[in-house]
Image (cartoon, rainbow, N blue to C red; front, side, top):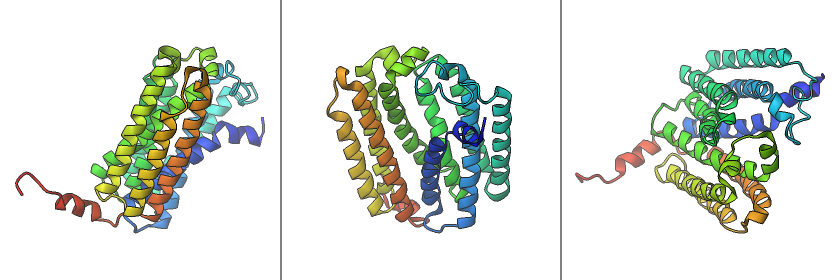
Length: 301
């Protein structure tokens, strides 16, 4: 058990991906007026809590991980890190992350972050993952918690913008995760996990992926149309979303499902990074979204 094991059980790539989406949520919530101290505090606290959840997930899944080729070398699955050490490590990360958020951000940020932790660790990892394909959809709520928490930290209220952040990142998370289950189908089948392609087959999974990507593109475009982000963001969202949908609509067959799933997965990473960058560079000014909604025609006008 060494330093690399402590880094590995915190799933640094997954934690980093959550920080990318959290950054997007913060820039969306701040309306162009970035309080950098709050920004870094929010990302530090959210990152520590996400890492805590990842460590706890490693402990809960250690037996399952031994059945899958890509995960059996993880520290707790391989026995290099005792379970109690992992859980203590998770507790320390979670404590400091929550403390940072409590001191330097808002109560809503703390509540959303801890809510995401409970969904990921308590609902998804400990219970639903082993029981139902619906675990992916429920787990998407945990994946959407970091950008929503950061949106709140930036000064965004729990308003329509918050609902759109939650919706957007849930809709991104579902096809992203389904694509992973297709690409790694053999591992999930060997572990006996009831993911969608194991329960309902490749073609049903493909349809769910396409539907969710189409809904994601609509939500991403709507964010710009309603004035929560600028015109450059709207162009990026439209083009990148359309390209992701095109990837999902072409080159599929049951025989090639694993490779197709990998392409959809990689495209999802590119899309979310482009959206995060676009939101950072072209957020709407505070009040623009409200002005856009106020200027919209009504039935009485």
